[in-house]
Image 1 (cartoon, each protein chain N blue to C red):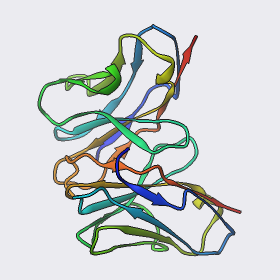
Image 2 (image 1 turned 180 degrees about the horizontal axis):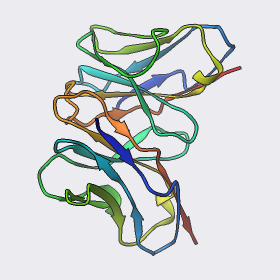
Image 3 (image 1 turned 45 degrees about the vertical axis):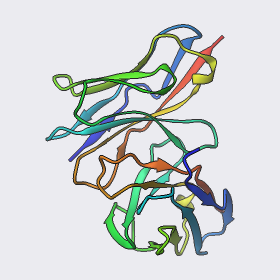
Image 4 (image 1 turned 180 degrees about the vertical axis):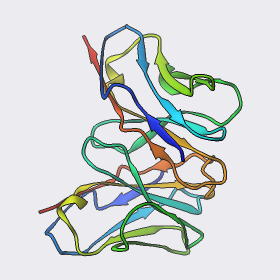
Length: 113
Length: 114
């Protein structure tokens, strides 16, 4: 069965600093992986997705993630944090032919001025 | 904006009551999935509807039920509400039921059970 682990329920970075949000997955076959962002009182917005093409995936708002099969990881990064990046971030895993996403417990990103 | 709309945005019910939540999917999408997001948690899959049929279900009791209509809009019904049902309920639509297709989420309905 698939699962997702997000290390660090809360991450704080200074404005302009590197953002690194960690996601490790468990899957017996190559998965599809997604990062979503949730702003307060809003639904989830897709940042980027990995569906077995290029291992380095670029998303919206300057975010990117690298699929590393050997480490079963799909960490989200952004070179320079902006105040508007403060939100909760969710990693999700799924498999082709299945119908549901399995989400991690989320990481709340705080950006300090 | 994803084009997925949910109503109502907030709802307060008492234990034992029944509730119906509604979702309009994005144009062209025939699949709707429902998720429950408890405070401080990630969304948990409830069930999915594809072309008006239930396509899969998560680990939720039968008092959670749903419908999908010919226009692909959907309802989530919860009977005999319990305090633990308090959560944000998210609806997501996608092109088909295959999970490789992106799910587009609405803003959710926040349900409080007192």
